[in-house]
Length: 161
Image (spheres, rainbow, N blue to C red):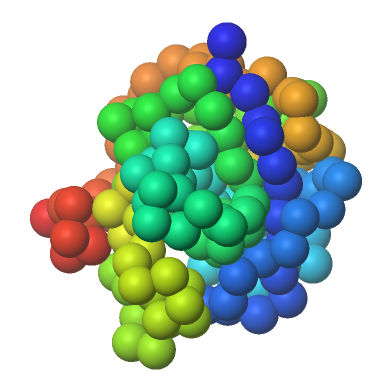
């Protein structure tokens, strides 16, 4: 079964996040105290460790949060999930709202690592059921629902489809 490896937070956008013991996610807010809560499509960011592994041979020092993800998972290829997929994570439930993102110029992650997997393989979600998420929580794909009209899907180069 898929699970949470780490949870991370940052008070600023576009910078690496730091690992914390747990995060609280709130409906209409996202991760409590995090910078992305003001963007309804990008309230919570997730990245699979399988994606990070692709760069670990070049950058063995990569740590959770280095790609600005709130939740680092293992055992599930997140970027293959369709928009609208519901994920039960611990006591919470999230709905995938966006696959990939446009990487902004001056991105600290790309500058420091030479590459950033978030534009290609990171996903974003909104909170459906509030609660706490911590390392070790199971990640379960609940169901697939119709993507909302305002959902964005980006191609593997971080460009809107």
